Length: 178
Image 1 (cartoon, helix red, strand yellow):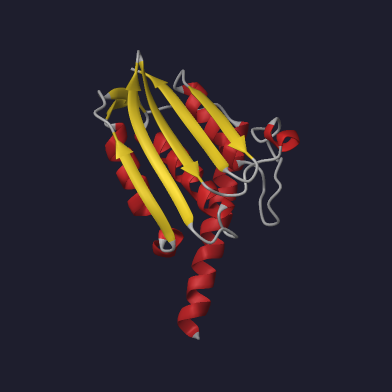
Image 2 (tube, helix red, strand yellow; image 1 turned 180 degrees about the vertical axis):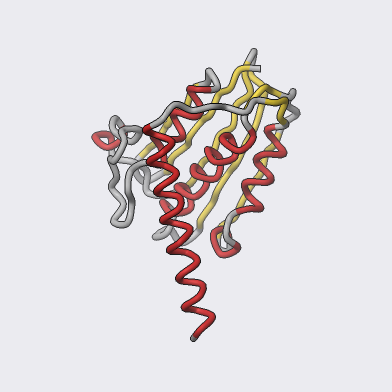
């Protein structure tokens, strides 16, 4: 019983800290600490840092291509990847056979990371607003995660795009310049 209470308190603290950091990230100028980074390494770290039960019932497929190093802020990029993966796992809560695909590839002068799920997809009217601060359709959501992700990607001179089909799933694509 005490272990469960401690675990609940840790989760609540983690969520509160995340909320406060998201508010700060959306409201103040961002100072990126850019170094040469291996995006595939960041993806693997992001997957490893998720709470153990997050991916326990999900078939995860990694398709990591050969990528050149890019100039980026490791922690901010990892935050983007973690948030997109968490959103994908949450979207699949009601799906019986959960599938998550994380793919990286070089395309022209960009590296691309795509995160796909086979959740219910996003309704067209919601799709236009998902990057708006404080917009959410989640019962426990705050609506800052995707707007913070977009801001971090744009600060790296990149793009964050979404494709979704109701009943099929959703794919987020992060494109960053080499």
